[in-house]
Length: 215
Image (spheres, helix red, strand yellow):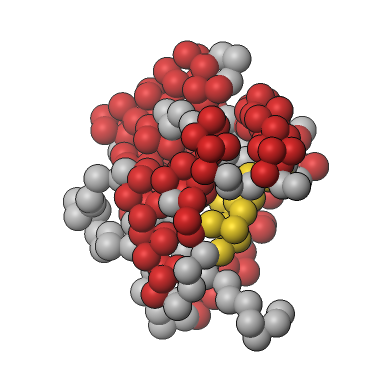
């Protein structure tokens, strides 16, 4: 990588969280402002932003609210349930995950979430093994799996899956947005097909954005 380039990798959870019960409200536009604050702290005014899953939603919000800080946005598997043909079904499902998190705990609700969207759990466990090995050997502080589940279920899930992207405003802002699909192994799973449908739903808008501002 060129010494002129910098990469800032921010986690999808709020940086201020320490333990369960100490949560601030998860608000998408605040996440966008936080990302820009990280960018400025690195001494940069603008950047190419890549967002995966929940971070893809935040990247879209940055294109809507923080256009001055973006050179382009790459959106990968944004879980935009409101754009799905069966939007009400999936919004009810995500709401049930949230309610079960309150009733039975976030770990059980996170399991319901993974099974409900048919995520490839075995493959994900295998893929994250190097990260988990690093965490086990590192002296740096990391959030526990329980805290991560709490953040996912009780803070992140509903704001992210209910987010309505404002494509017209993004176009007006002149931000180039590129939609990217996932790996082939996920295309065989219902969880990815949901997201694939969402990407397919958004793809014409993305193509219009590229044609409009990518010239």
